[in-house]
Image (cartoon, rainbow, N blue to C red; front, top):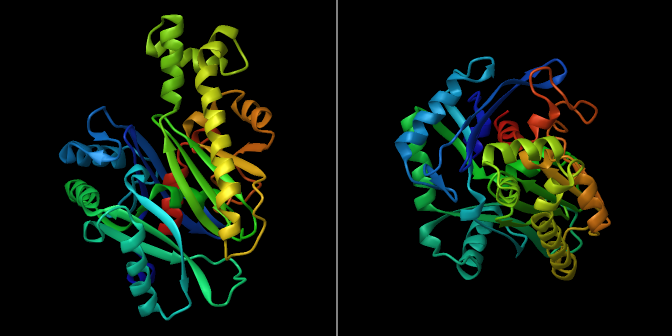
Length: 357
């Protein structure tokens, strides 16, 4: 990856999910960074399923169409930093001795053979040393990620179809953390919840790095389906009712959604219990390991009343994540062309764009 950072590829962030493609490109100005290009395009059902590409040609053409329709400056570069599907990945933190760079790679690969639930020959493995303060000079913590080569090859074929070159590819949770966690943050422990169209992802940041990820099928679409089924209306009507009422409007809409939202609350509690019982005692990196706040992102996070509902249910501080905290600064949350609410759906693309810049 050193060659990528040494050269100016003028790359953009490319977030690919089952339901949408989102693009974001950052530029530098006298004040720091700015958003110069962004856009999205829907992905019809059947082209990608649970992160696995089923129609490479169709997806490549959609990316081309999305690039042609971006708002702001036209994207002229062929270089992209792209996301890989979290649900197909492996992520864990290994504790290994302090060794030189060559030995570190060998050590990580040796540990991977014992810990990764996939054949090492079948996956691509990447790693980075967590930068938290060490309390044990003999050991260090390394964040290790793995992705099946078959999945990566599918995405590379799509980029070729779209006329693009991927200068970097990473699991989407890494991009989300890069976008939402302040760059100089080392001591906080944060649960990030990406409440998306088709799934919800949990990410635990603590001890200076990402520690844990998981995915559940509860999603914004499930809430719409609940309204449609319970109130016997079309999906289009149910979506409109969900957006108009949220958890603060008509009782019948609230009642239709509450079983899934209660389930979501219980899933969050389970993840918090797992974190507190298994993780901090095993950390080498120091810092505040008590989980005190939750950040929400994803398009589903805009549901009216969701922040208050989860905060009351969990007895924790819950807030919407700020995708601009490492781009525009903490005090700026809106751009003329892209509202803060809309930007919550661009968190992964913005995190990828940050790596590109």
